Image (cartoon, rainbow over all chains, first blue to last red; front, side, top):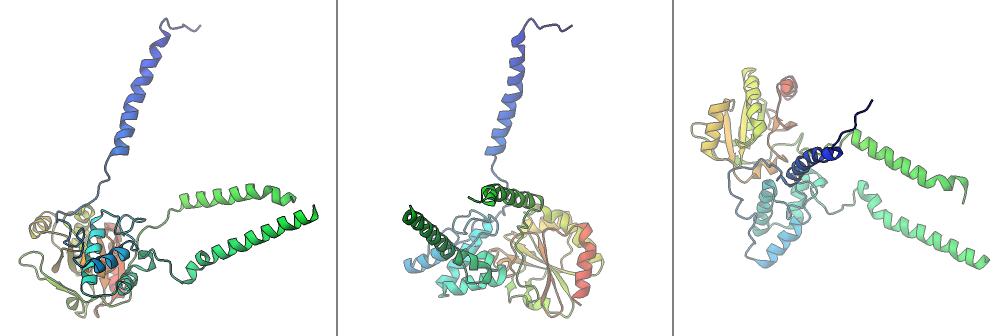
Length: 155
Length: 175
C-alpha cells in the first residue's frame, strides 16, 4: 500500500536544489572566456597601428579584410584578436609600407597556405559552381515564368 | 503534380539528414597544412634565442643531413610533453633545430631547464614571421627538412611518443 506524503510540496525545493546549481553551472560555462595559449610578448608594432600614409593604410585594410585568420577560422585577420592574426597584420602593413603590391602579398600567402587563406573567390574549377549558380538560378526562374505565362494563356 | 514530385521535399530532407549525419560522424579536418612540402625552406635568418646556443638560418638546414625543425614556444602547453619526445628522437641521432615563436630568452631558458633541451640551434621568431613564411599555423609544429634544405614532411601538433617511428621513417626517407 502506498503511503501518501503528508507534505506533498516537499518535492519542489528538491527540484530547485537541482536546477539552481545546474543553471548557475551552465551560465558559468557559457560566459567563461575561451582559453587561448597566448605568449608573454606584447602585440607586434603594426598589428593594431595604422600606417601614416592613408592610401597605404586603405590598401592594407582592404587586403586584411580578405585574409582568413588561421586561428579563428571564419574570421578575417582584420577582425581577429588572435596573436597570429596580429602578426599577419604586422606583416601585411610592413610589406605595403615597403611598397609591395597587395596582390603580391596575397600570392605569397596563398603559396604557403593555399587559396584557403584568401576570402576572394578565384577562377579555379572548385569555384565554378559559385560563378555559375546565379546564371543557373536565373534560367530556372525564366522557365518558371514561361510556365506561368503559358498557363494564363490557356486559361 | 506528379507522384514523384510530391515526395520531392521528403527526398530533399532525407539527403539533408544524410549529409548532416555524415559530417557529424566524420568531422572536418580543420588543420591548415603548409603548401611548401617538397619546396625549399624559404630564406630566413633568425637571431639566437638563448645564450650559449647557436642561432638558426635557412642555410644551416642545407647541411647534407636531414633536420627536424620544431616550431615551439615556452608558453605552449603541448610543447612541454613534446620536448621530452624530441629528447628520445635526439637519442636516435636526429638533428633537431628549434624556432621559438613570440618568446623571451629567460622564458625559453627556464623551459629548457625544466623540460630538457634536445635542440642544436634555436632561432628567435618574435613576430611569427618565419612561422608564417613556413606556412605553419600554430605551435607546436615540426618540419622534416632534407639535406638540401627541402621540406619533406610537416607534422601539425605535438609529436607524441607514438609518433617517434613515423618521424624516424620520414627522416630516413629524406636522406
